[in-house]
Length: 78
Image (cartoon, rainbow, N blue to C red):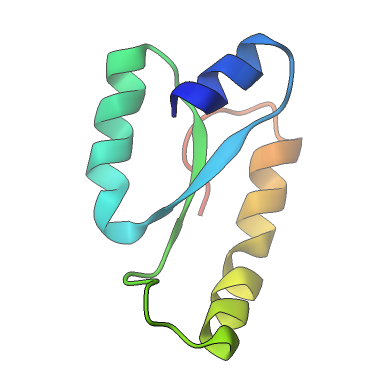
């Protein structure tokens, strides 16, 4: 999240993906940094997923990722 905050301060649109189980941690770190970073949650777990499963995850969250990088709103998408 520090990297995303740094990019945003430099005028580069940033967001991150996180596994669903890290949603609370992502929000806590965002609050601690005073930076409401946009993020998209993906199904957990991601390790040991097949290429096909990962493509399905990517297709599932793509609309939210696009919304996060093209929206002026900050915070979680999807």
